[in-house]
Length: 276
Ligand SMILES: NC(=O)C1=CN([C@@H]2O[C@H](COP(=O)(O)OP(=O)(O)OC[C@H]3O[C@@H](n4cnc5c(N)ncnc54)[C@H](O)[C@@H]3O)[C@@H](O)[C@H]2O)C=CC1
Ligand SMILES: O=C(O)[C@@H]1CCC=N1
Image (cartoon, rainbow, N blue to C red; front, side, top):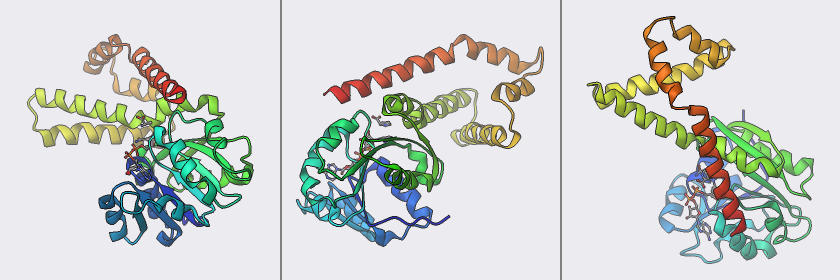
């Protein structure tokens, strides 16, 4: 699949929107479509080496304003506390009718809409970093003035390298607590499970092969078989066999309850950020 976008400004290309950009480039986006900014000159130089038009705000205070001039699509990838400041900085330079997409958690559509000129359409998106390798999951919520065309354009940034779920803004913090933060939960699981394998006497390389290969294989099996995870689990769990004993220990840990508490903690933090 090849993606085409209008002239696009990406402001604050760090970990998250860097992954979005990687996904777009892997999906065949013409790199000359994008003008991007970072704070540090070192990061901007690294993108320039790859043929992108990148400027740093630490060396060019006008970098963000210059980037949005004439852009039909503006993607904000800065930290939540900087979204308002960056929008205030670029508001007068935004192209009328531009679509502004923020990937920040806890920064409401209302707070962004209040800062942009009439006619500029705002969309929130909550992607996750696997988008950089073509396997993102992104939640999208439309602002009050974002029409179907704006939502389709914003969504196309994320469907280029993953799946998009459109939800009302009221559900976006919860979506972020599942799939936005989710890669961190999986990486933690990998870390801890590999430690456990090493404690059984395996080398770090052997532990990584066993754990990461098993996770990849199991996820592929869910997709390829079309079966429910519980059915696939039962197929591994021989009655009176070894897995049964191990699964009983894991079920004692109340994983569902733990995930619910973890998600609620992330949602509470998103609400704190929104209120700050
Ligand atoms: N990291 C993740 O997995 C996810 C992050 N997000 C959201 O993405 C946003 C960014 O998070 P990360 O990428 O993790 O942070 P980050 O710190 O890696 O990226 C932020 C980027 O903004 C740049 N920046 C700072 N001030 C700037 C300015 N005034 N103008 C232009 N660029 C500026 C920084 O140089 C950096 O490159 C946050 O709002 C976060 O809520 C959303 C979903 C997942
Ligand atoms: O940790 C954070 O605040 C961001 C939002 C979701 C994933 N990372």
